[in-house]
Image (cartoon, rainbow, N blue to C red; front, side):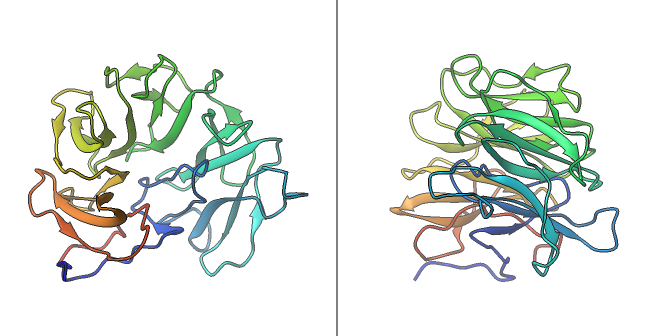
Length: 271
């Protein structure tokens, strides 16, 4: 029987509760919802991507929606041909960043106000995925294969001052800031197998955290105090959720089912 940790975290396959400003999932592969801690409305909201209004089974038209936490008052925010996915709230809840693509694969990074107004494309060459806000809401981190291989980049909210943080002939993906903004965790297969890494927010001091025979590939996310990382891994043939310290020690399996993805922390403390 595999070990489970005390103080169980609520981990949902589709509906992921996130720390403010952390946590998004690319719906080009799986449908994704993210929950924010607070928005400038009377109650918290959930932003998600859905094809529920598609015209036919051949119509691959995902749009961005917002709803109350109990599932009521679902409002469509986008209305464009193609696929809008991977939505993520800004820390203050006033903006949403997401990916727009023609086919659900790699797309451009877009930003809009929480009511759907102010729709703006920040990039224009269709090689982007997994955008997330920095904890202070001033920047967006993302992965891109615009230079042939997937690497991690940072830019301002208006798309300017784009800087490359990794430079590897491999896939560097799923970046996520630590709560204080000083570190970034991400997934890389630079050593031949997908593992979890940590680097400083400027791209320096890149350190491998995991070293497993399985594939550690699922959107790593820091705990609220920045001491642990939760991730999904195929260590034992099926994808399950694991928890580890930021130095890779105490690698603990949390789920024991078939195909568990997209883990994220609530804002509570770890016991």
